[in-house]
Image (cartoon, rainbow over the protein chains, first blue to last red):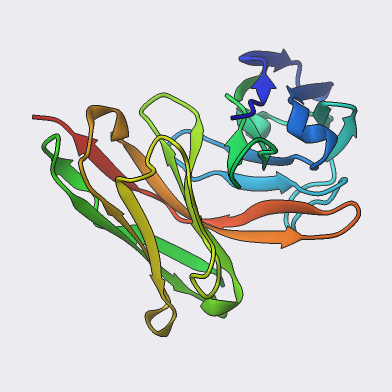
Length: 109
Length: 124
């Protein structure tokens, strides 16, 4: 099956901008969706499609895609943004399936 | 308000079976595709299975194919996961998730609502 590759960890100073990336062949065809997960909680959708935010997600979260790389950018990171972030897309190999990236732990300093 | 509430998890011996349920409310259940996603302790998210609104399309990950069965009862607004021949590596928090897909040029898909999960521990 296809894979989505994320870096394991990234840090950002409070109020600064950080980008989390996700690479995989399926992203050439499908937009990634992005999920925030805080310890002991369920994942929460933060970005979907080309660059769409669900209701209630701050506009400091944005998404983009270039080739096989999807990116989640937080502009002006806040302490409450510290969490694990996962990308997801349809899998383009074989039978219909869905794939998640391994997750990136964001630390806000 | 959309709510998804999983139940049925617990401690089970390897090789045994377990049935998970997900009770949905706050939306028209039979309008949506539904999925199960799991997360092993300290690990990332892993897609498990998905089912279309009328159960006409069902998909499984290779890791559970032949052992797990996803089903739904639209009259009861409920999603199920029958797990047979359980293995230690099936130990995880199991989430049900509502799915949306927009087809066509520039299409995309996403899981817009998730339950809190039910923990399955496979151990002797």
